[in-house]
Amino acid sequence: MSINMILAVSNDLAIGDTNSPDGLPWSKNKEDLAHFQKMTTGNVVVMGGNTFRQFQKMGMGFGLPNRTNVIVSGKYHLTDTDNNVYVQDLQETVDLMKDNWFTLLEDVFIIGGKSIYDQLHPYCDKVYLTRINQEFPDADVKISLDFLCNFDIIKRIPLNGYSEVEVWQRKK
Image 1: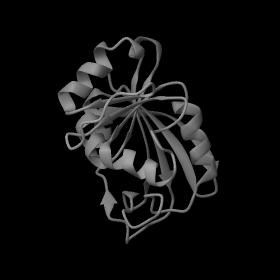
Image 2: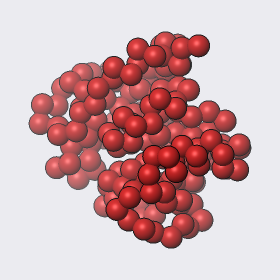
Image 3: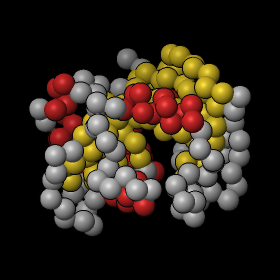
Image 4: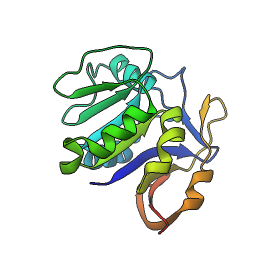
């Protein structure tokens, strides 16, 4: 089992746009979506409440299919379902990632949003970072990548003419 972060970021560090229908500042990047699906299907995904609600707005109901969805939200007290586990705070999330039976069989992917990335990157073994080679000055959700100083880049995977995936591994 490994704990991973998976995200896409533009040249100006945009990761989201709350005014966009799908929450992303860029139009659909089919190759990146296929990469995301390949990496996360059959595994555990950890997301914040805003990211979960964005998936619901996009018609994905109760989270991403074929994955165990862990939703971190102190605002909502929801009942766990077959594919969803609701946790209240960071400590409960960390305990779940480290101790729960499903993480023995599956990898964990932290999928956002910004607050979840900021809080959970210290627990990650790897980061799968899609670089979108564009700028989105109107995007209202940006992230610092300063935490990557604790990681080494181990692979680059070209996706298309304007994006590539960088794989980062935590320094030993």
